[in-house]
Amino acid sequence: MPTSVDRPPANGELRRQYLEEGFCVLKGFLPLAQVQQIYDDMMSIFAHQLRRLGLPEADWRTPSGLSANLVTLFRTDMETYLNCARQTQLLPSIHTLTACPEFVDVLKSLGLDEPIISTKPVCHYMTGAIKVPGGYNFTPPHQDWRSMQGSLDGAVIWVPLVDIDTDSYPVEAVPGSHKLGLLDTEPHAAIPAVSDPRIRDEDYIPLLVERGDVGVFNGFLVHRTSERGDDRVRVAMSLRYNNAAEPSYVAHGYATPYKYGYQLELLFENFPTEQQIHRIFSNPAS
Ligand SMILES: O=C(O)CCC(=O)C(=O)O
Ligand SMILES: [Fe+2]
Image (cartoon, rainbow, N blue to C red):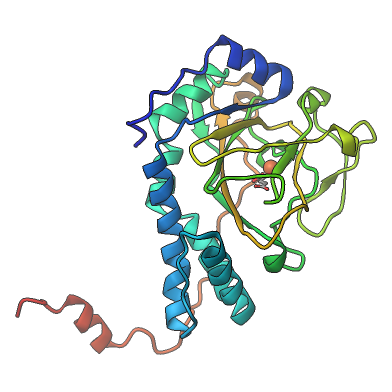
C-alpha cells in the first residue's frame, strides 16, 4: 500500500484542472518501492516462460534487459508472450493498487462519489518490435468511455512503470477534448479510432511522466499512444473506474459491455494425472 510518500490531496486546483482539461497528473504519488514491486512481479511472469523455453534471460531492471526479454519471447512464441502479458493483469500487487484507499480518495476528490471498478486492469508493453498484428498495443486516438460505457464521469488511472520521455512511446492527450462528448469513430486494427475533424494532430500533448507519477483521464478525453519511440519498452497500466452513484449509470441499471467467459473443454488431454496430483499434495517434510 502507498505509505511512504507525503502525498498532496487532490485539491481544488487539481479538480479544476481535471474538469477543464479532462486529465491531471499527480506527481510522485506512489512510493517507488511499490512501483518497483509491481514491475518485478510483471517481469517474473515473462521470466518463467523464458526459462521454460530455454531462452536467454537478461536483467529486466535495465532498459536493454527489459527489451531483450520481451522481444525474445515475442519472437519465439507470440502466443506465450501474449498469455504472459494477460497474466500480468491478474497480479495481486496490481489489484491491491487498483483498490487502494488512496486511489479511491483521489477519484472521490475528482467527483466520482462512489468509485467502483469497471473492469480488470490493462497492462501495456509498448515498443516497435512487439507490435502485435491487429492487436491491442499502440492505441489509435480513442476515448475510453466507448469501451467502458459506464458512468458519464468514469475515469482511468494510468500508471507508468518506467520513466517516460518523448522517445518512449508516451501517451498523448488532447486537453479539453472530453467536453466534445462521445465522438465518431472509424474502424482500426486495434480499437475504433476517433475520426472527428475537430481533433487535430497538433493538439496532442505528450505525457512525460516518471515512476511514481499517476495520470487520471476522464473517459471522454481523446488520447493515443505516440508512435515515436526507440528500442526501449514502455510499460504502463490502466485502471478503470465508474461512479456507482452517477444518475445515468444508475438509470441504466448498471448495464455493462464487458462479457467474461471460459472454454468448457479441457485445455490439455490426459492432464492432470493422478501422480501429478499426489506430488502436489505430498508432504515435503516426510
Ligand atoms: O498506455 C497507452 O499507451 C494507452 C493506454 C490507453 O489508452 C488505455 O488503456 O485506454
Ligand atoms: Fe485509453
